[in-house]
Length: 155
Image (tube, rainbow, N blue to C red; front, side):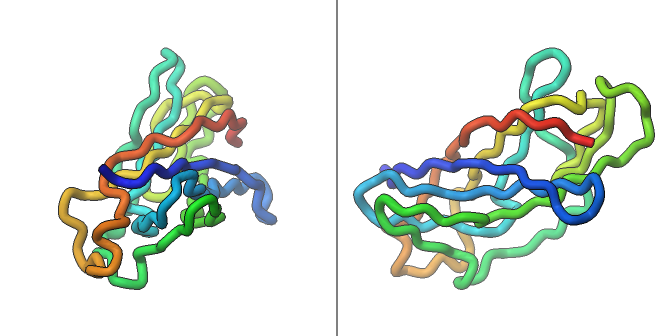
């Protein structure tokens, strides 16, 4: 059974006008060290649509990158690693309707979503993680972990 981890979220406004970033932190609430992979491709992003359901985005300019040994991060018990993932949020359309706008969040594209919505992210490792150091095999968080939700107002 993999160690228990918990993902916490913060969204901050960048210096660019109207530019948001989603910063994802990981807190280890367990009693043993936990290892995770820190590449954005292992972070699932979902938005709440106008029907009240969380929907995954479609790939948007995906950059397929295999993890290297340096992409595996160990988190000690009762500690938090902040800003493990930082995803840029872009508006992709010019519609005036705040109920149907297109966004890109990192490598995820969302079409026709409300500007006031909720974001949910999840950590989604693969069954066989490439280049996982043998020293981290016993502490690796190998199951999908759904994090908390964050209410946002997107541009």
